[in-house]
Length: 425
Image 1 (tube, one colour):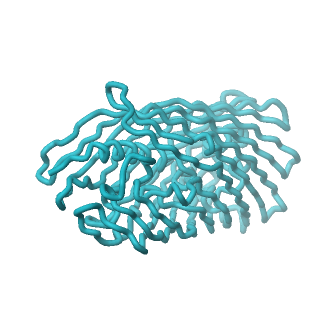
Image 2 (tube, rainbow, N blue to C red):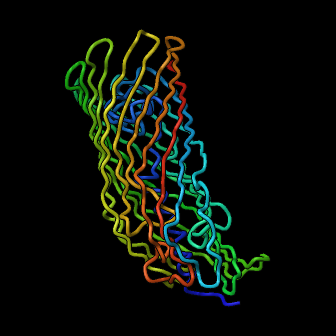
Image 3 (cartoon, rainbow, N blue to C red):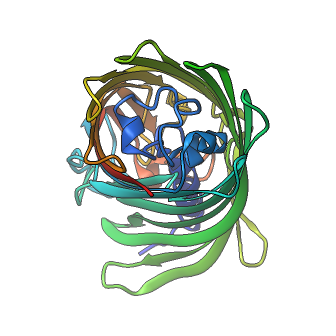
């Protein structure tokens, strides 16, 4: 039985890339931060300021929240990722395997927001949410098992914020983000002679960032919002564990990787047409082009792998509308186009995403003068993705002999159902 050290280097790079890349890529970033915004496909996010969830989208929007308010939301997110083989080859000495089933896994993402009035000009808020996350898992024995099996990433973000209303036209906002990330990623290890081991990488980190916002009340019925979220510097620390089929440990070492997430800038508009209709729109830019390489080092500072990435900046466009039937019932609709950051030639089994189009609907029911319930649903039509990968996403650190060559297409989609309770007091 031969253990391939080069393959271990690839596994460290590939799994740590998934720990970072799939977490904060545009295609897997969690914009699902409120059910009230879901119904509009988050159009007007930085300008709508309908409730306390504005803490995430634009902290300056807290000026529109009267008194104290609590928002609690839950999102059920079900991605679908189905691979079809069009010419894959197996790793040396290994069986080819199947297509892997549906790699998408159901996940539940909660949000919590609280806003209170400090004085007539100043509001304080606290948001707790999950800005990034992923859970995918392929069936046992699939073609790409040496590149990816299970990928699960969770984040928790604590975001205290403050807004200050300078005058009747301009409000400024500032938030601080304390973020924790945890990840567990697995795949098979080719040990030669038809023997397959198991690889698991788990790791975590805490890091700080900030978000800024400005809200302009252009007229009594029109608002424009501008919001910026900073990049966050992570130093991911994790353990790489490789075992043989009977559980004997072949590799157990610590690894780290410095990751800098992209910053983002949003500009949004909100206009009340009349007593029945509101319209809104949003444009968001995400600065992915700064993510060019991933360097993974072990506990003694030696570079285990250097992966070159050429990710692209992404854009998101959205428009939406509200219809107020009466004081109790509001319906919502929205559409969005969301670019993915991964070029075809860099796509891996852990990141089979592509550009997507959102179609969203939702509604709000005021249960009393102080409370309301929002429900939103969106279906994301994801462009089919091609993959031709014999390196698992790492440049120059593996060969088809150790990981095979994964060649085929992905059919992807996402369904999201959100519910929210808002209470003012």
